[in-house]
Length: 237
Image (cartoon, rainbow, N blue to C red; front, side, top):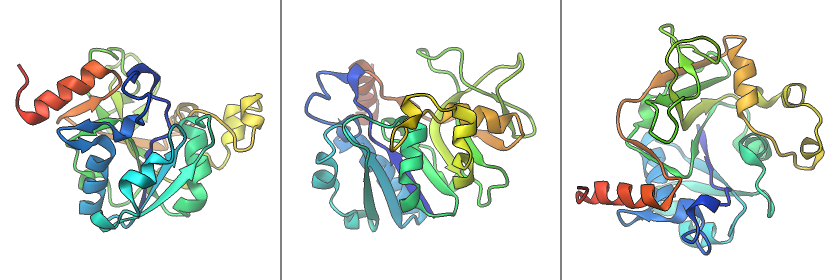
């Protein structure tokens, strides 16, 4: 199995920290955020990881090398100066990911989630790891039903998508039918969000999920980065 790490964002909410360093390369407890993912993916037995890049893209191979220090082979999927968003980025990386299901993880999160807890087989088009809603996202994203299926409609309590998931390439097969032919989508390569594809697949019962009750942080602001760093170093509070 291969993995994709989303690392192409501009990190605008993290400035000035990201003026000269891409957000996934910012250190927490002495280790860049993206390296925490690489360590856990290697522990799972992943051999190849694709990293999509845009902002300060040249820093990723300079910092990470070829991945051999983790027993990995790294591929860098450059998206150009403007990121392609999650759907476009995943679509652009598919030639490097192949035809089999793959893990995808946001490069700007930190979690103690064990990737070995992901299902060994994928019946639908994707399987998403959900977490309790953080203070900055109280409404959540999707509903996790007792049958393990995710849906976007209903009055039940919503959970937040962690940014960790298992995907089939077929999720993107008919992306244009869902996204449409807007100006941005007509670009080569196209730019579009993944969420509409997930919602369309949920309506067909093709997206499953699980709840992670452990540690998780969306490192979206300098304050959250400092707090996470303090927690991991054991100096919080």
